[in-house]
Amino acid sequence: MKHSIKRQMAGIFIGVMAGAFLLCGLVNALFLGKYYLNNKKEVVISAYEVLNQGFRDGQEDEKDFISDLDLLCSTDNISMFVMDSSGTPRLYTNRDYQILRQKLYNYIFGMESRDITVLNREQNYVLRESRDYLTQADYLEIVGTLDTGEPFIMQTALESIRESAAISNRFFLYIALAAVSVSSVLIWWLSRRISEPILELTDISRRMTELDFNAKFTSDVQNEVGVLGHHINQLSETLEKTISELKTANNELKRDIEQKTRIDEMRKEFLSNVSHELKTPIALIQGYAEGLKECINDDPESRDFYCEVIMDEAGKMNTMVKNLLSLNQLECGSDVVSMERFDITALVRNVLNSSKILMEQKGIRLIFQETEEIDVWADEFKVEEVVTNYISNAINHCEFDRVIEVKIQKGPDAVRVSVFNTGRPIPEEDLDRIWQKFYKVDKARTREYGGSGIGLSIVKAVMESLHRECGVKNYDNGVEFWFELDGKADAAGAEEPGKEESVRKERGS
Image (cartoon, rainbow, N blue to C red; front, side, top):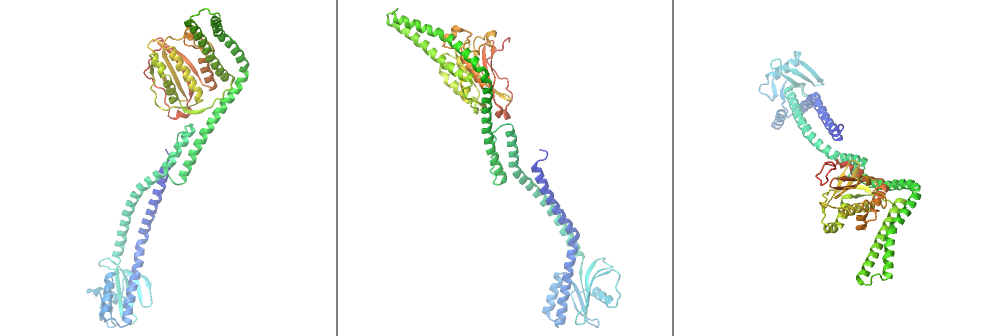
């Protein structure tokens, strides 16, 4: 991401930290030397006060006083020289005190050089900076007269102060560079830890715009981001429920608009077809019943045969009436279509398991390899009825190699379910008519397995109630029936159907 929050956070924190170190380094470079100098001034003045107090108290010859003064001067690197009014040395801390005595003479007789800068002038002393013209070294000096009248001079070298300041600045620079490097790595890691839940929320919101409600916030952060993630999960569940209700309401609205114009024609067509389809079984029942009554054949086997025919025809009529009632409910729009999200792979597998025994009895080999969970939006009960009709139709018409192949293919917006069986193709002129009620391509064979010609009509009516497509396709070695369902909720990870190895043989190949 071009403007990643992780990079922005890391950049801001690293920039602030580096700026703070840079500012501290600049302050050190500009003011550390002056701070050391001011501190040295206080040290020299403090040493003068100790010296002055000792002479005032008459301790200049006491060993304890001299020892304490030596320790103070050696600790703070201070050289000292005191003489009496006659020029005789009274107290000094450096054997080579001639230079200090000469400087004191120059001060007393006003013969000082120009390389002197007065920093502070008091009643009894002058605090100043001076440069030795031989060594070109700078010194901080305090020169004057003690309260008891003895001239004195004290000095300390400034070069050590400047050197200490330079060493301190260099050390701070190294520490700052190391701190910036280590802190940058730590800040980058922390920025990633902080931004990961936010990026996860971004991805979840993107998937929600594609109606993929399987995305859930899983991070266990205990802060405002965690609360937001919990609310996003609740929003996802609410949206999924609302969309399901809206899809259901939308299908009902479409159905209500269409059913008013079709209901009269459907009733007329229904009565006509029912009359035609019931005429044959009623005639058979009537004929065999009259035969039983008139005792045409008195042997038990004949009577049993007549009863079996009557029962068989009555059962077919019962099945046909039930199918007609179900179809009538679909076409009249009185059956509620409940839209929900479910796994079509599991539904197809359950139907195939129910038909497994019948397939084994007829020596049919089933090919169904789909295992991936594929979610669709539809009425699960009605889709199961469509799949059952397709499978039953394939079993009843399976010939030649006796193979049934079932496939589920995901597309960008839809999921296609197809059922292929080896056998004779449907004549081209009958392809568009097989969806009509009571239409039979091979009436003799349909009658043989008890078909009424209503199954595919029910499939067509169910798919129209779902506002989805269904169809049929001929192959050289069989027939494929298919239907499609809404798969947009699963479209985020969908791929185009690939070309898989199949038992189907394209016509004309």
